[in-house]
Length: 339
Image (cartoon, rainbow, N blue to C red; front, side):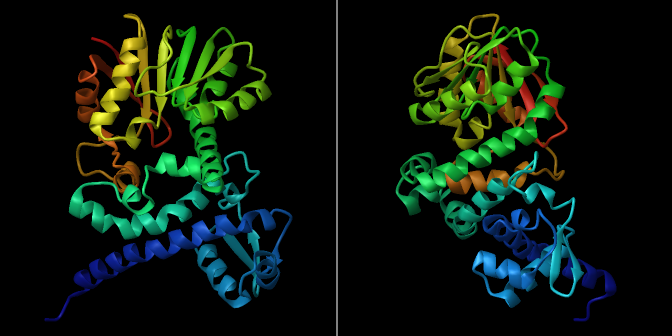
């Protein structure tokens, strides 16, 4: 059966989409090798880059040529590349650096790609089956991966924080509890914006230890405490606003509800809860969270959710969804209050 031009175009469009996996892996490897850092001072030849990254010059040139075709690098002469403005966030010292995020993605990509079939067959996470433990336990037991994960989360927070601060008025909250707050990067940004507020970073004891140093370095130790604990059991009471950034998407509905119930027990009747998450469109519109949704299934059994699913989840913890506030990032703000 002969295909017409329209059929041919559709077929090649699918093939192009399939090739995106090659582009993504090349980008991750460039981040892992620190190529952008090496080019920060100016153009270098592929031979020089290969020597500094323990790579084959010919193979590296082919990878650089591919990424140059996406605008991340520019080939100024035969085999000589420079970093473009578009590729700038690949530098580790860039104010919007995502180098660690991409390097972390490269670390887990083989598992995500190889594990999708298992998760589709079972509806369960693949990572615990392969690693023998939940991904967060694995990070705690493998410090080299844990450090990369922590840096990736700091990078993502640094990129997303301006959008959150622009979209939401934190002025009404005098005491903010950041549940699962990691290094405290988001709460630090909020407290710098709101000098009259105080806060608490709450995370596991190991994460809390490192967060204390960051809070001191930010000059916020007099207004921000750091508490270690288990958010499935309890969270610090007395907050006007409870913030959970990229926490619930790590967990199944059952486990996410347990976290929300801990927050609800700690909340006064006038307190608010703010979720920073991807909110998936209910229709077929494209959204970055749809790729993350499948990744979270494979890695932790978690999921991204629609507004309707968030409302149902919150109701199960005696909370009421008040509004969803879009931001200039792929993430939205889901505000809830006690019912």
